[in-house]
Picture (cartoon, rainbow, N blue to C red):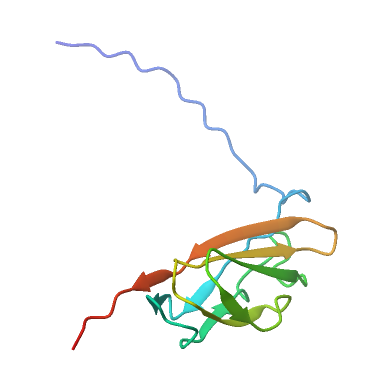
Length: 122
């Protein structure tokens, strides 16, 4: 017969964690379409949507938006709105960065790289 000694187990109750006022907001980007053609030459309009970004403590808290477009030539409308329409040259995969900031200065950031596609010749 084998005897097994069991150690007592302590159960510790954890209460809900209070939100820390230092937590940055969560920035999110949705892109439609998520890819553009190689050598697109500004033909495709991409809608970039940051409206699902939110402060952790209060998802309804107003945020300010700052869009940054890198790594490819781009044409875009107002870079300070929650949504942005842009078109790209399609020479390199465009990198899109969104900074969201709360009224007390906490900032969250997210980066999205759009894909380039090579269209098949007919």
